[in-house]
Length: 414
Image (cartoon, rainbow, N blue to C red):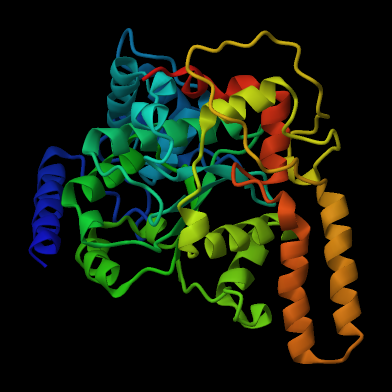
């Protein structure tokens, strides 16, 4: 409880400091019209300009370009628009936040940040991209039961690395990700005010408008206390993107009544939903969970060999390209880890067909319980022995054709 209170006090002090400096949270942006009071009179005319389909006008973009700090990193139009939308159209605040982010990117070079803890020991963290939603947004999956590393700097680097990977995986026209966070294993060691503030600072300040949906699964009562302390400081726009869900998709549960599966079905294709359900069940089995690692270097090795995909086009990858064997030379700058023992994933079409066939057999029995059992069996049959913990077929398809997306993480040395 003392840690929770400490976090509350820290967040409140941060909010007060931000308000006094003009960098307050855009808490009221969702409830008030865009503020132009901090802009010059010459920019006020932008408020009367016809809004573009995405709500950002050419005049607003021009203002942002003119107010970038000299010598700062370049920002493309999509980035300018995200920062404008993040503040509800407050251009002065948007420019100030963007300049701060550009300075941060120039200093930190997040696109090159790697989690060296995972390079030394792949069991350190379990937060990584695993696939794509129906709209092509990368899915970040994490489970608090598996990580062994609680070091602040390592967790910061791993978070940055994961966010940057998600951005690289975004197909054209996609700007957001979905984060599925399984809170199985959440304990007192995770009630860290410093880490909580780190997440809010990095995601809100440097990756605005990137979060499309945040699924919080199986959060214990301990997290409820933490959430109660910090929820008042979460931006209303972000608050609306959070879904709290129970883990009600275990082997003994009726999947047709599962709130978790129902929510995932709204956003993911059947194969991806099945993968996530299988993953969460495995992570609740100590014998299986203890054997799990996400080894980027091993994944990179397989990608170079074209071993991650069976060559079929995966509709859910949203990249529209076929798998091609990679002839690129290997770059083994770190000791090679053993390749995954999991066989190659099946094509989504074949898996879907197998699932449909299994469901049809049980459906003919006329038994509701039988149909529910069939749904689980069908989901398991989609992956069965070919469940690849490194990701869904759609993700593996993309990495198989673009192994360079795994760099520089794959070539990180201890």
